[in-house]
Length: 342
Ligand SMILES: [Zn+2]
Image 1: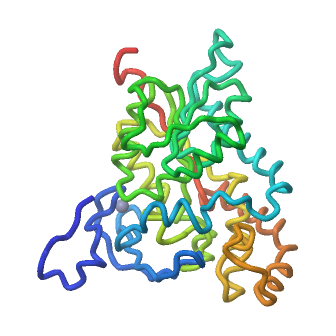
Image 2 (image 1 turned 90 degrees about the horizontal axis):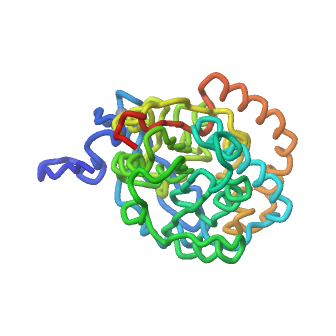
């Protein structure tokens, strides 16, 4: 990533990075954002690209283990996770349908049933999506840099994930029918290099599906500096559809679609962003479920009073998504068939 190294720089810390990580456009000071995670306190300056609207979190990234292996990302079972299981399955199935719709090889489509088409989940978390994809007939694998994710995947789903990051994962070039990168890219300081590498893993005609929060969304506008999906300092880059598109195209991929009506993240993000404007505790319910917050009378009361707004939030969010202002987006990009001979 380009870094401003000038000794005369009046604010060397705040000017990093020097250019937009999506389009190389100029970055300007935008807003300060306090972290909402009680396990990672602090306030962070965001800079925004004048050209594509993408923003970056300035300053050094938190240590990986601290930010992703503990606190709210720890593998303790969240409160109510038993009740949430059917919901999580519905999220996974929607994501899988999205992959299958655009992939030229999908289970049940094409000539032979076995072996299934190859799907790789990059940054597979606890392996739930790899397990769901296998059940649906995909020859699915994944890798994950966090040790606790790898352990949880083996224990909960019998899925063996490679413990690796994008830069060191052992994946053969041209070997995958589909690669998914689900809410990972926003955590990286160098998103272009990551997408370039992932694109190379696709066989010609294969598809890459990238899910990230949408800074151009209605809920980002409503939430402002307290938008649920800002999640600083973990989230390093805050993409707009234009910025994400530039990254995919820069990696030599053809953008096929950008989906924004998504069950996972979007309705909850809208509702939580709305509630964040009404209470002094940002994203209280989320952190309560993650066990980083404890039950406290005032934010709990506000949260309970706001629960009836969930259907309204879901309806408005669905409309926003249909109009290209969804809270998160899933970009689908294809490796051109004439990229190399198969
Ligand atoms: Zn830009």
